[in-house]
Structures are given as structure tokens and as C-alpha cells.
Length: 320
Image 1 (cartoon, rainbow, N blue to C red):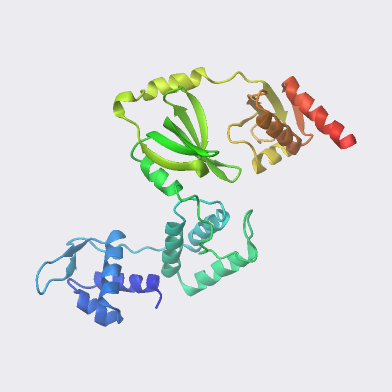
Image 2: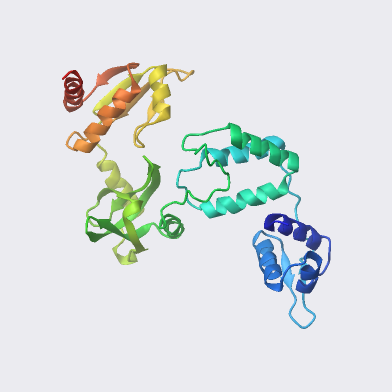
């Protein structure tokens, strides 16, 4: 019997008894004492209200007036859950091991026919990033950066931090207030406010080597941080009208900071407004490539001269 199936059976066994002992669990399910204890602890962690009795004849009982709720999923709910899992494979998402155990538990709760449907869906549906030669739902090869989960746990407690970042051959430390943690172009990034230089800073999580709290006495209020960031917002210098084909391309990929506003109820036309830092060659090259990716279904209202020159240089290289 698989672990998930065994735990589900033990939960039903416990729920039908007023009292039980570890020895009874060992004998009933033919498992060792250490396995029985681990299973009981996992069942407690899942929320079953067990109370331990101390003493020679001690054991466990389910708290009075508390019963294990029955969990049932409709066929469509199960498909929705697993398609969501399938669509997010190979994205280096955090808590992958927990997603793995969650998938195992869900599989243990459903019927054989429902499991067969999921196996068939897994063979038929391919999403971006799916390896067709290894489409296993429970594959654990897609681990994120080892610091990511630890970093998220710290953020849930405090967003004022000192982060250590590897830059070239040296490690630098930045006191920051974290604004957003996001994933773009297959890597995780921090958008942060530098508490010393008082400016926005983007830091790749891949270069993170350490995190610690920032001293409370030196902290800037969140209100002041928001005011400083709003003052630093750049003036818009790229304004485009998008048709349906360009909108379709936009949905396939767009830089995180760029958004569109639909101009009709059918979402077939839109306006794009953003700022391009023409003094950064990497950003200039990226926006040139991306505008070419959008295609011909755009109308230019405003565009920096440097971007036009980038287009021209690209065309000259193609001709020559």
C-alpha cells in the first residue's frame, strides 16, 4: 500500500474509534512503530484534532465534537486542479516538494476512473515548458533556486531586509524594503527600495547569498517609501495603439512593467503607455526586439528617437 493510500485508510480507521494506540495502528496496518508515529504526526499536521494521553496505557483520541470532514471533488474540479499543475511545470516555482506531496494526496482521494482520466490528460495536453518525453505530474526535477523558499518565508515576517548579492567576484550588501517578488524571462527578481540610496533597485534572486533583518532604528516608513517611489516614476515616452493581432502577441509575452488598457468592450483594441530608458542599451535592445515581436498591427502615437534608430540599424544589418 502506498503512503498516501495508507494515511487515508488510517484516517478513516481513527475517525471510527473513540480511542486508539500506536500498537493498534502497527498491528492493523502491519507497519513499524516509527512509521506509525510518522503517519500519526502527518495526520495531525493535516488538521485532524487528535489528543495524546500520557501514561503506560496511553494512546490517542479524537477531540470531542470533532470529526474528520469528508473531502469530495467533482470530476471537473479534479481536472481543473491537475491542469493547473500541468500548466505550471518547468517554471521553477517555490514549494515544489509540497506541490508533489499535494498531488500524491489528491491522487489518493480520487477513484481509479478519475485517475485514468488524469493519466490520459497528461498524455494529451502539452503546455509551454512541458517535456513531452517526461510529462510526469510528480516529477521533482523542476526545483527553484535554493534560496527562494527561504526568502519567501522571511518575507512573510518582515520586508525590511539586508540582502547579500554576488556581483562578479565580490559580494555586496543592500539594505532594502521589498516591493515585489516576481518571475520574468525564466528567472526570479526582487523589486526593492534601497533604504540607503533611496531609489528603486532590481535584484536577481539567483545572485542572492544571504538575508537578514534590517535594524528597526534605521527603517524608513512605508508611506515615505511610497512617496519616494512615486516621485521617481518616469515620464511616458512610448505610446502605441494595439489591434487584435498585436494584443494576441502581447498576451504571449510582455515585459512585466508594461501593461495595456483596452479601448472597447470586446478587448480587440488597446493603448500601451510606458517609459523606455534610452540610456540603457540592454533595455533599448529588448524593447526593439519586443516591438518587432508585436508585429504590424500597431499604430505609433509617441516613440523615442533612439528606438526608431534601433529599428533602422536592425533593418540595415538585414539588408547588408
